[in-house]
Length: 229
Image (cartoon, rainbow, N blue to C red):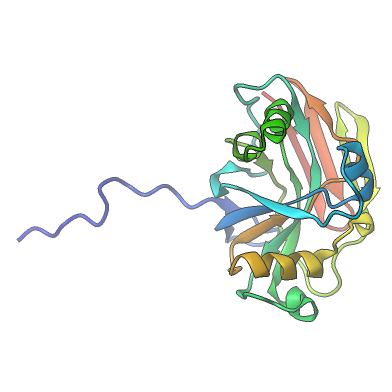
């Protein structure tokens, strides 16, 4: 008797982010993102400093690993860059206290949250969700993950386009810090190994066009570089 096939078609490949100094990669489960987590960026986007940060999501397969370029997405004429520190989750937990949150952290990476700003603004005006403006294909470039123990990064976070600096701040400027972000996310989702959290961007976000070279850095964590093609 012939065995029934396990799937009706081949399952998609696992999305993997490289880990610095490791042969094995980091299998990505999902991508969560924090909105407006730097005071100056909040003001830049017309927000109130007293509003708490909020979360949105990107699919795991939106990730663009190091060495790959990002295609300019369709249905937009205003693609923006947003440089971010990325938390790589290596432990599991729900309703995690702030004091225990760092125990879930495997390491950190440099990420860029690519945004269809025109679609985002249109969605805001109508009270619609942001999925099409944030969770599109190739919207989450990332560097290699650096395994990390102890206090989170606090140094410079910067992004340049074609050699000109556009975003330049410090991770210490975040309104919610890493333990607070992890703890708050764990109240909304049961976190698990493979989750990535993009922690928000500082001021200076701006447009990208085809051919632009984007270079980002978080001090002590790493660098990333890609072109918009």
